[in-house]
Length: 178
Image (cartoon, rainbow, N blue to C red; front, top):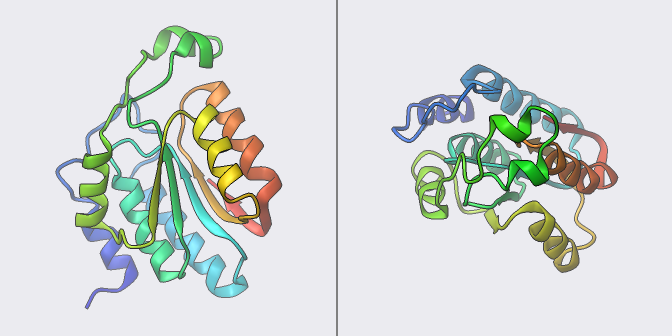
């Protein structure tokens, strides 16, 4: 039997952990965030569930799924599974020319495979669609859900705004955003 830390560490060697242009977070920062999440939860028992916005291939999702399972929380994963939306519409400044529509695309099947192979998929719910449609749809379906922890890994300004507009009012006291 593995400890939660060993499970998170071992799964990070998956063959689908493809390098991005410039990773905003690496293995160590992701492991640190999962450690802080678990440590905070053990000390404070924060009400709410865990949310991830932007999952690419699901390698970080797998790590978060282990932490969420350890904390006995649900994990909600929002992603288009089509890559980035149009940077000219969603980006600001240099983002409009730096990124391309569809960049960082990974299928839902790839993400589910990575999470089921390297994580703990049983309490993970995937919400497919760009944030402008998937967040309101979820909000209407489950309007009272609280957020204890949110991992926002998006690249375009408007996407960040959409995520924060949803997360901040629902974040429980003592919760964390990464």
